[in-house]
Image (cartoon, rainbow, N blue to C red; front, side):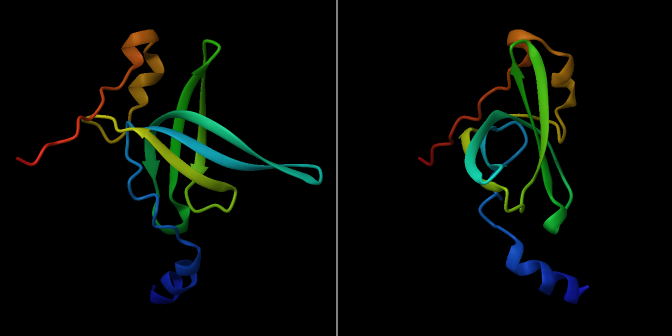
Length: 118
């Protein structure tokens, strides 16, 4: 088991620890088209997180032109350039699959307000 962790260690990224369920995120992907490369941004809500180590993935959902689109991103893939957290979500579930059945304002996730230390 220690051997597997030693092999995985150089490929793991620790900057994605702050990505949580319910967050609104921008995922920047490296797309290769022929000999050219470009960065494509996918914006949506994190509805699930799964796996551990190199196999860790997040499921991001957005509604584009009235159609729900979900993509599963491997967190430690070299194709994922970066993940920006736009706003933190306040949820009480580990998976937000119920958002698939919601439409319009009912599909919103409440925002987590910053706590003040007085």
